[in-house]
Length: 269
Image: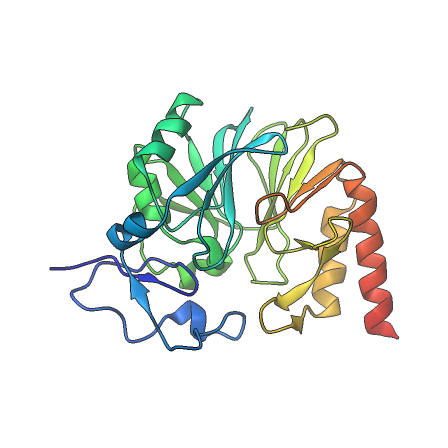
């Protein structure tokens, strides 16, 4: 009997197979790591037996996250925009409760994910949400480890989804790393949703630029300069980070600008 195995360290779900893969490609990459006890696998059913999803408000957006400390602790958010209802980022666990909560909020028109570390169980989420489109940057196509006809790859530097929503290929962490700019929301002044590139720092007053966060490999300055140019001219008051509560509320544009200047000054010293 085949199972869609899930890596216990990064949370990536693989295409169904009778036995687990020999290794997790995501974790063997230098941006991630293999768990100290070696490669471990789980399944959706095992996850559901041990964990639940946290659902609720995260500073003005509806958030979803796996409770109980599994893999990378990212949270997904439901954004009701003029580009339709977007599930930004994804999780390894799908539950009936979460699907019902999203449907009660109008459902999901498309799933958009910032980079491969958060691809997780995107195919199962798409199926549970009625076949929602999954939008990924083509530069990270090789990291899609469970494919689906629902996956659509976009290319280039910017993808305008509507008057208010634009995807930006910020790169740096992965070649296809993507940030979402929502000009009109969710709070007055608009917001940037950057995933890991850049990543909201623990002080929630700055952002960081890393090629690998767990292995402490800094992002090349050329990539940071490119990102700085790409984000110039975008207005946003808030920056929503990758995990629950890790958000910069108010002064987000100034915080990002100061972080660019600080990083580039440090690497030039």
